View 1 (cartoon, rainbow, N blue to C red):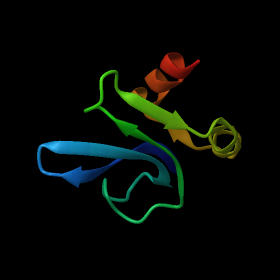
View 2 (spheres, helix red, strand yellow):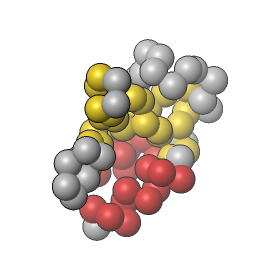
View 3 (cartoon, one colour):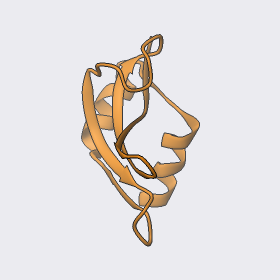
View 4 (cartoon, rainbow, N blue to C red):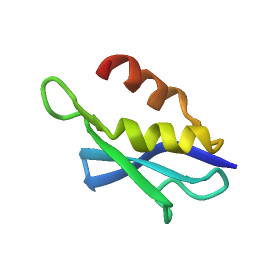
Length: 77
């Protein structure tokens, strides 16, 4: 089963996240299938970039977004 979730990048105490598609059983920062965007919580306001076309492509093929990724959709419109 595919899932759309966050993968952490960045230094210690300076997190940055990628929004990625990967198998549900893989570890958080494991090898991913496709990168859909990024999220930086350290900026004011937090910056979110999500490629809506790629997101729709993967959801149509059965990928399940996490609750956090779903909340990003409401914030970016």
